[in-house]
Image (tube, rainbow, N blue to C red; front, side, top):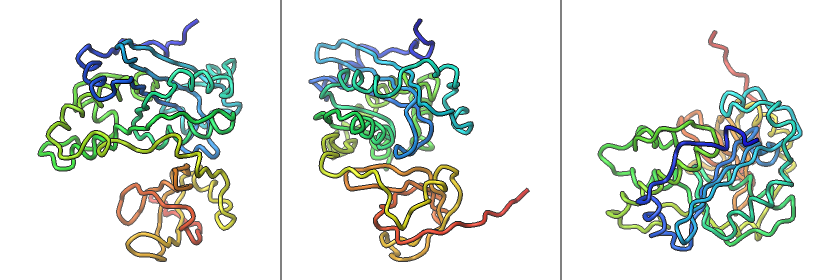
Length: 298
């Protein structure tokens, strides 16, 4: 029986399909994962959904729930609403990822905050020895940041839920199929707004080629950072000595959120306490780290 998360009332209009095919004449695929956490090095995919538009304007969908072989962390359940019981009899990732790779083929891939989903995709493909496709990865979040950088009435932030509200789209967030469709609808809206921009679509929204991970793919943390994954999983404050940035070798207090792979190596995604912004730190530039006792304001 089809799971309720594989069904949706949201659809793409003919205008949206035509608009997307104008810039992706060979077809395009939007995808979204729900995971047990944000770090592909030690977290797991539990839901995959995608919607693709073929060159002849056909719309096809893909959906699968996945057994991660571990109990779901309590902290993630409030986001995706998936239960252990729903996943218990589902296939594991090795039986799903090959079907998903065949679904998107060499189509360009769109995701919101695509570096997270793409990092999980790459790890799953690598673990199952599946060749990386020729797909280009496009990020609807990056697209929105560039489009609204100088806008007079921009959205309050660039989250998918905020952009959906900005463009009057109604959907259930963190349901992978609906996220995939909304990312395409948002992307179509942003294409319309990009017409007045000096830069082209690729400059505004392109992230990287999936194939670029063939050249550099790391899965092991440097010895000096052994143990940092515990702080990432618990999202507890640490102090890092960082060799990069505008103030090299200075100590920075951050709240680590995820470790992921990028084409130029592993990065730490974290919330910088000083700037109050989320930032990326190259792991090879982190000299050392230490724990910090957080103040209890209660």
